[in-house]
Image (cartoon, rainbow, N blue to C red; front, side):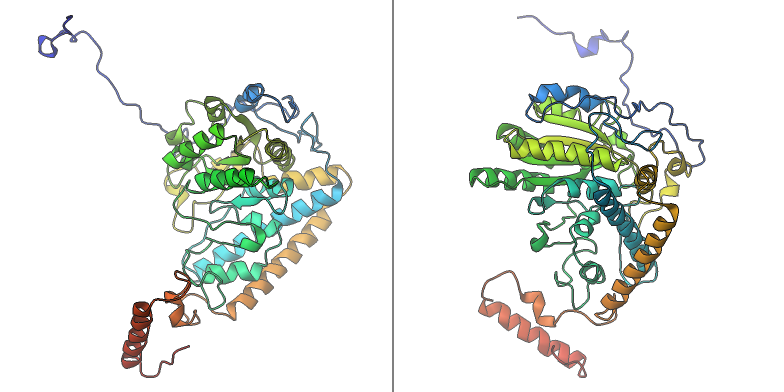
Length: 433
């Protein structure tokens, strides 16, 4: 039997020492920013294969980038969805409303009205254009930066703010972290702070839809950082094996909570290329081009509905704000990154497209922004009547024991009564709700 080299013999003494590679972002605070290293193809450059094509035909779409809006602000190429002006205006309004909502809620957090908030500034198209491209009864499994889905589906702003404030009108009874919405009526699955869990949930729901012979599909979103989680890969395996009718979105906004996309694998390949390894369709899309996002999502949704299987879509975009109100991005990235981002701002790009079509104007846009600010302000005042953080207007005390059992067991009833008695002893002026 052959013997390997004796480690003690020094046989490897002439080999270079191993070194560990630690990903490092291109720019740190104070660095000048130059995005010339990015390979951004011109609009309309990539072909649009048939929605029923073999998954292997989408491989070029995984390493390229689907783009529709050109430098002249007009739509071009085979991916142009040819949306009518009214649909474009509705999409623009939903994106602008989402941004106005974010700005107001961010301010509310700084005023102490809620404990936490997360903005999606610069990423609005990745959720809103996608929502416009799927059916209203398709099931959505969002991450925590998809508030635009609810807004696009017409969920009342007051209900969203009630949840953020965890007040007495919060339909989730204060049990979820602010911005972790849930709404069955709008086919919006409960947001989980445990990242990537929504992927296997979406795939499982899609498989169940197929088992029942339904026509509805599932969609899910994660950030590129979450794509390094095990749940992501488990879901991809099940989606591929069982040909699950779903659209799986990876929002590559370049940064996780404080680490850049290289820690999730961006230095090696695109995130869309992971579809190739699993044998499913994949598309990499300009995430700041609302028309491209719509076109890619509609293609993937049609494919899923026709039993063509799952599609992985990478939305190449940029997180213009901090990760959350608990984050200071100036501590780890250059302040110039946002201004130098070569794919621009999704709202401004759609606005300029409509103006180029002669279907919009600067004056109309200014008036819309003012209207939306007032709309959000009015919704905020209405929600604040139900209470804000720490002001006592919360759900009745007994609700903390509810919604786990169909009928509350005797021992929990006993605990609830005991808790009420102890609270009355401590605060005699307090009355049970």
